[in-house]
Amino acid sequence: MEPDYWRQRWAEGRTGWHQPEVNALLRQHFPALSLPRDSRVFVPLCGKSADMAWLAAQGHRVLGVELAHDACAAFFAEHGLVPKVTAHGALQRYRSEPIELLAGDAFALSTHDLADCAACYDRAALIALPDAMRQRYAELVLGKLPSGCRTLLVTLDYPQHEKQGPPFSVDQTEVERLFAANWHVALLERRDILAQQPGFQAEGVTRLHTAAYRLTKVS
Image (cartoon, rainbow, N blue to C red; front, side):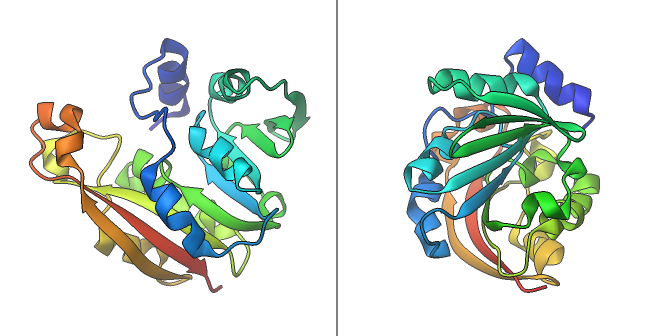
């Protein structure tokens, strides 16, 4: 996906992937990461997700990165916050403690930017990327997280030929292929959600599962 594609979707309000409610798998499985309070949690391709406010309410500091400046500004506006906006290299920083959002290309993040992240929460990043970009994302974005970092990864799994992504299907075999070399991968839950997704049904999708994984970086 080209950057202009996502910017245009945000500018036009075509953000069907946005969930106004906190993700159920986040509520259920984030405690499995066993983080101390005040941990820094990285949220890639964060949009204006309500999940970030939930993470902050659990006592954590949040670092999000989002391509669309409109999404970053909207997050703070919708939560009644006025962020301080400053330049951060090639990115633009929106900050109102304990939440910091970097607007720009996630691939521009440095190892230093992510050095103190104890955890990562990926609900909408990996599945937003086409197959050709997912390996680069795993290596060049999540690969910059420090050793010991714990990630809650949420994916979708459906017959890819039945629907044009995004979001794309990422099954367990692909998760293992992308992460097993540098992360310990544990499947926490896999649930059938087709009945709750009329949009997928309308497109002719016959099977839809969501899965939650705990990834622990070992190198």
